[in-house]
Image (cartoon, rainbow, N blue to C red; front, side):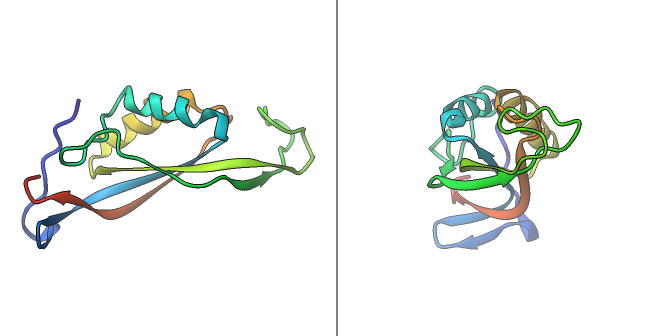
Length: 134
C-alpha cells in the first residue's frame, strides 16, 4: 500500500538499533461500539506498517466526552441545546510524515467510517521509532 522511505541525515535520530523518523500522530476519539469500524476503514487505505508489523495502532481505555449540539447541528447522539455525555475511546496511529498519506488516511480512512458529524481528529508532528532496517 505505501512503502514509505525512512528519512536520512538531519531529519533522522539514531539510538542503538532504533531509528526515529519524522511522523504524524493521528488521534481520533470514537464511541467504543465504532472502534473496529474506524480501524478497518483506516486499514482499507493504509497498512500502518512499522518495520515488520502492520495495522499498528493504540487504543486507550474508555473515557467520557461531552458536547452540546447547537442550532444547525445534526448530532448522531444527543439533542440540540442539551449537554450530552457519553463513552469515548482514543485511537492513535502514526505514519511517516507524508501530507498526501495523511489526507487519505483522514478523508478516506476515518471520516466515512466515523459516526459523528464532525469527528474529533487531532494531528501532531512527532518522531516515530522504526527499526534500524527501516
